Image 1 (spheres, rainbow, N blue to C red):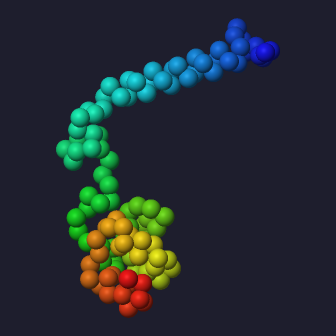
Image 2: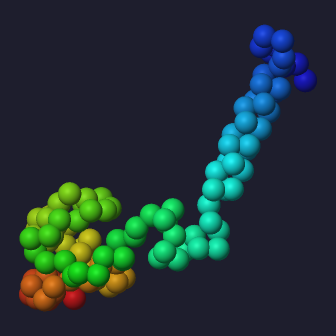
Image 3: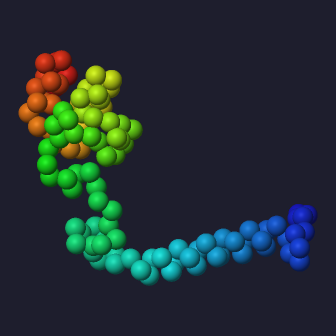
Length: 109
């Protein structure tokens, strides 16, 4: 197999060197992660998840995740109510009674 020469080496050798560099950087990163506590709430490296938020969402609240991030629940109810149904059915977040009532009025839940 003929390989194009790049500088003093081949493309394959350059790619291998780049891959090894990325692999070493990944190994160095893993050394900084506390694997035992990675999925526990007390691990400072763990990203917060939307389920971690204990307060139920009401109509005036704004989502901070997903395709409707930065949108109010009230607007999502008008534009894409099935998204709220999905959230409700899959226990993604809890809702205040006003949101539940609005979904029930529309016979969505």
